[in-house]
Every structure is written in C-alpha cells, then in structure tokens.
Amino acid sequence: MRSAAGAALDGLRHLVVRGVLRPGDQIRQDEMAETLGVSRVPLREALRVLAAEGLLTHRLNQGYFVASLSPDEFRQIVALLEFLEIELIRTARWPTDAEVAELREINSELSVASEDPIATNDANRRFHFALYSLSPLKVYVAEAERYWALAEPFRLRHLAASDTEDIRLQHEQLVDALAARDRALCIRVMNDHRRDTLLAALSAAGGRPESPAREPRAAG
Figure 1 (tube, rainbow, N blue to C red):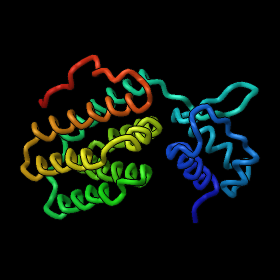
Figure 2: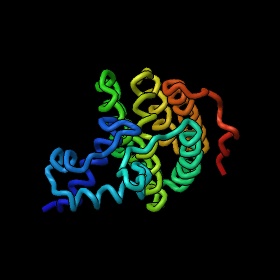
Figure 3: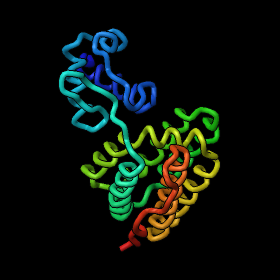
Figure 4: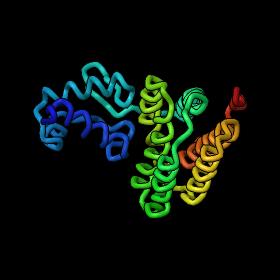
C-alpha cells in the first residue's frame, strides 16, 4: 500500500510540474493537505523533498512557494541536459526491433494529443525516457529526470505554442537514426531537437530567443 508521504509527494509534484500551481504561488498547507487527502505531517515531508529538488522554495516565516525559473536558469538546465543526453546516447545499446516499434508507438501519440499540451508533454517525456533507458548510466537518467521536472513550466508553454507535428518528425528522425545504428546521427538529431526546444520555449515565455552560448559537442 502506498504511504501517505509518497502520495503527498507525487500529488504535489504533479500539481507543480503540470502548471496547476504556478511559479510564485504559495503552498497553503491546510488547503493542500485537504486537496491531496493527507495530513500535514506527510505534506511537510513532501514540501521538504520538493524544496531540495528545486521545485519549491522556502522563505523564513512565510512558508513554501513554487519556484520561479528565469530564462537564464532555463538555459543552464538545457546545457546540463545536453551533457547528460549526449552521454546517455553515446552509451546506449542499440534497441531491438520491438523497442524501435515501441518508440514509434509512443511518438505517434503526439499526433493524437496535439490539442492537449499536458497529454503532449506526457507523450514527449515518455519518448525521451524510453530512449534514455537504453543507457546503463542510471545515475545520469535520474539527474535528467530531475532537470526535466525543473524545466517543466517552460516546456509546457513551449508545447502549448508549438506545432507538435514538428516535434513528432524530429523524434521520428531520431528513431530512424537508432534503427540505422548511426550514433553520430543520433547525437546530431538530438542536438538539433534540443536547440529548437530551447529557442521555442524562450520565445513562448517571452525570453530572448537567442542561441546557446556554445555549440553542442560533437559525437566522440
């Protein structure tokens, strides 16, 4: 049976990363405990965990607030994800035919969910993490998951303002490169995909849609 602390953590994280709770919103503990159906003890534990992850901030004598992410901080997260993603692809085993088919199936859900940013985001995330799971670098996968959560508010705005067909086509190119066992092409397609996501997300959020300060590293 799932613990109350685990339920509180999952429920509160879901509200933050899906944008139900907006950056700067204060977490009112009595109301949130009632919303999540838990007592304040497991809720406080969840608040501490999410503050440690960077999704919340704690202000002395004020309480917990949803963290705000600046465009510059978003760029920093993308730069960290660049390093992690390159290493994950560099060390990934080649997928089986069944795994290639599964990646294509997940990617096809982007077309079905095109009118729903949250459903699109879920399909997008499952696609990327199915890809990451091909690597044995589990600590890198866990770090990628943490940075994805931090960047979720920007990513949701990007998906709401983007043509999901463009995203689906880039994913399809990545699957084709995996199926062809062309690692250099995989990294190049991923770098292009990440750059387009960065520029579109910054544009949607009103930040300067400038290119990253450095070019993505080439495959080693």
